[in-house]
Structure formats: structure tokens, C-alpha cells
Image 1: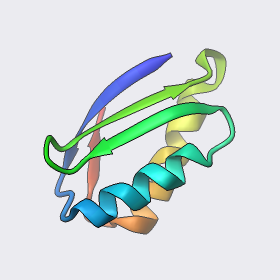
Image 2: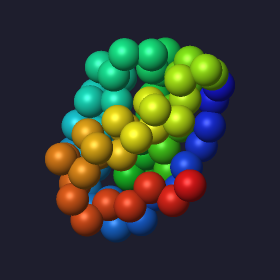
Image 3: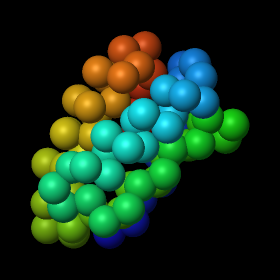
Image 4: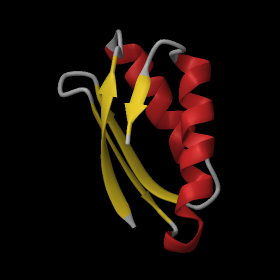
Length: 72
């Protein structure tokens, strides 16, 4: 399943790159992209575990950029 999300308060391109790398390392994620310019994130992950994977995505993103919110 591939879904797009809006991001709020993503402060820099470096943080976006770190978030993208961290998301790609999560088990069950096939692909991910985080764009600082558009403030958007795309996650492609296993359909049957998508909700659980998104909880992990939120957790790893908060480690990199605590102020950034993922709008679902």
C-alpha cells in the first residue's frame, strides 16, 4: 500500500533525508520519500501491517524532528 501524508513544521532538508533513511530501515517498508520542499511524505509498505508500520514511522520521525507532525 502506498500512501502520501502532509508534514507540518519540518525544518530542514537534512532532517527530511534522515527521516527518509530511518523510515526505509523499518521492517515491512518497501519505499519511502520525504520532501522538505513540498512538506510531503510517501510511504509504501505491507498492506496487512500498514497501521503498525505507520506507528513506527511516527516514532522514528519524532526522534529526528520532534516538532514535525505527520498529518494523516
